[in-house]
Amino acid sequence: MQPILRSIESADVIVYAAPTYIWSFPAPVKAVIDRSVYASCKYYGGDPYGPALMKGKRIAVITTCGYPTERVTDLFEEQMRRYCKHCGPTYAGMLAERQRNLKEAFMDEDKEMRARAFAKTLL
Ligand SMILES: Cc1cc2nc3c(=O)[nH]c(=O)nc-3n(C[C@H](O)[C@H](O)[C@H](O)COP(=O)(O)O)c2cc1C
Image (cartoon, rainbow, N blue to C red; front, side, top):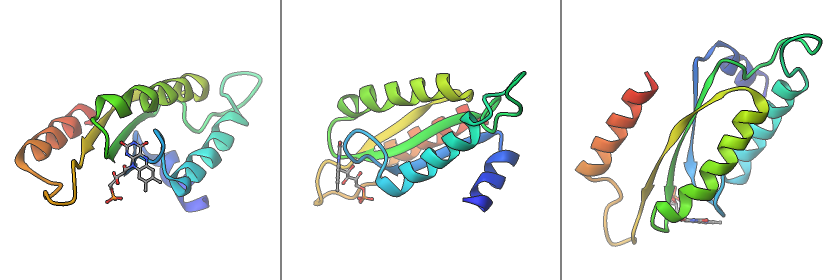
């Protein structure tokens, strides 16, 4: 976690990119977020708590899923909003893209266009 926490410290925007597992992050990604919660919430920021790791940063999520995206992002985004309210970063939004089945390639021009547009919102 030390190198990851140092990267977070020097970042303006943190993008968590992972497949959706049970309306959330896969366990290894969740473990990183849990540890960074500790790093930020041990010190909420402001007197008398001291510096906060996540305060002033923006957090975004890029995820892939199997269900229609609107049935995934509602719960996923709600937990991100509450997490950001609790820990100090600003929630910058989510890009979710569905893979309908294994017969079609995941990537197409529409997805690429949405990914580029989403990236621009983070700059
Ligand atoms: C354990 C597990 C849980 C999953 N949970 C969800 C889910 O809650 N909602 C959803 O839309 N897709 C779910 N999926 C489908 C994955 O999101 C999908 O397979 C993934 O985005 C494809 O990316 P990958 O090829 O990197 O695995 C789940 C898949 C697995 C293996």
